[in-house]
Length: 174
Image 1 (cartoon, one colour):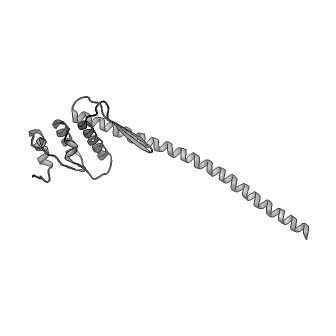
Image 2: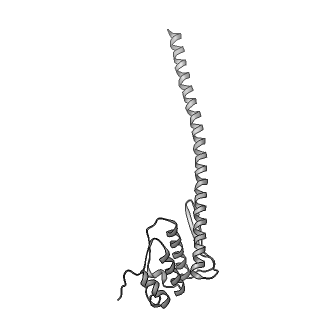
Image 3: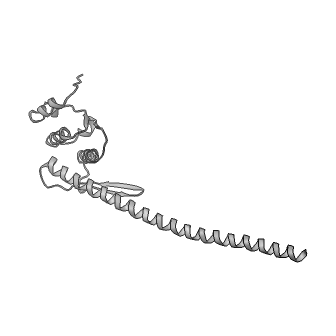
């Protein structure tokens, strides 16, 4: 009986150790697969971000040409998995910074299903009137709604007044 019990104990221990080895090998295999999938996912994310970045930068460049009607450096959007940057080349003026923000917003609107855009008059304060007029033309061509607040001479200029009149929903005065 002692020999049978010893053989049984050894057999159970062997079965247990074989199962542990099998599970360890499975763990190594799954860990390798997870590592490969994470690497593939990282590559796909970078590929997708690069596609979005290229598409938005091309659109922003086209918007710059349309809005300024001359060759100007377009701002560049750089997308990374955990961050982004929006560089404005060679011009750090407040008006240029605001108009480039408007360009980014407009491009994002054109590339997404966002239903509307809202811009306050503060963004237009230091932007040239002709640029604002061209931005208004761009807003009016969008399929989504644009809610903007304008004040001062731009609303009263002859070239912009027709665009404003055709798109205005409400006028507020003080």
